Amino acid sequence: MTINKKDVIQLYKKYYSDRENEQVDLFQLLEQEFSIVNAIYPGSYVQISPAFVFPQVVFIDADKNAIKFFKDIGRIINLINSRKDYDATPNIAFYGIDYNNPRAIAYKFTRSKLTSLNTHDPNQQKA
Image (tube, rainbow, N blue to C red; front, top):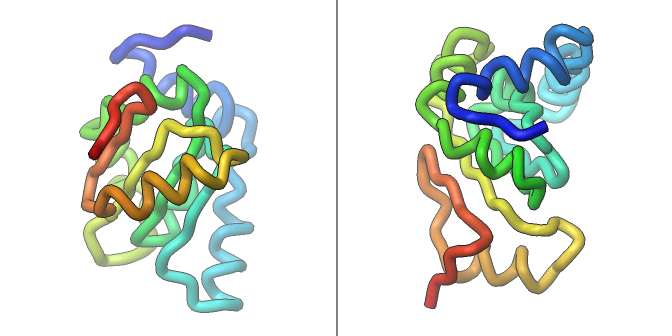
């Protein structure tokens, strides 16, 4: 499914909220049991529901639609703000890389700083 800016939230709804597959209750249970405040989600696709529970989340997925999805960060943050369970400002980052490639992940994590509302395109190279 190819997406455009209008379809960002619709893509999330199609694959997660409309199918009642957000798994927010799972993330809430993990947070309660382990007091988690930050998380990494390799293979996230467009499932942003961990950010409803955890204030800091790093999403990783090389899928072209996930990369396009996370480029519309303003709409994503608005959705997170409307659903979050915490008072803090959401701090999310997205890496459009293959999470199965440890070198790519190590490169991204050591060469760039994670900052609030940060998105990364796999076609961009940093020195």
